[in-house]
Image (cartoon, rainbow, N blue to C red; front, side, top):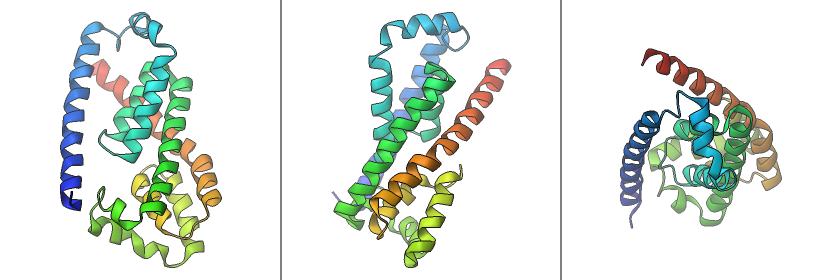
Length: 197
């Protein structure tokens, strides 16, 4: 499969997953689990162990193969499991997925990345890697910032001479802040939309 075909497939899967998510949201809304804490608790009662495991796996997959919009899965974690547990499950899944991205890029190289992102997008950020020390700091700042293209930068880091432990600690220490900002923004945004409905 060519790079372009892979990217087209990922785009199509993203569209399909978005349609499925919208359908599920409509179904859950009709069940009343977005408007009633009691109904949500009842719905999740028999999914206390399997639910979080499946959710973490979904988060890992969406980081490595971006077919689910990241914001949607972040919001789902907080909505279904609550602020504390949802944050933890989001964090675990995203950190594991980010580590996998780094090692996939390091092992398979540029050819792997081009199946996910275009060469134009990759080259746009490759110039940042000319000075490894500067890139390490820039990478940490970008992972800390909520608007940076995290998944692409994680793949790019795998192509550099960044030490795995440096990468590990940047991800582990910087990711929580980004996840928290996204989660809070999405939750309050969703509540505002629900009030309008």
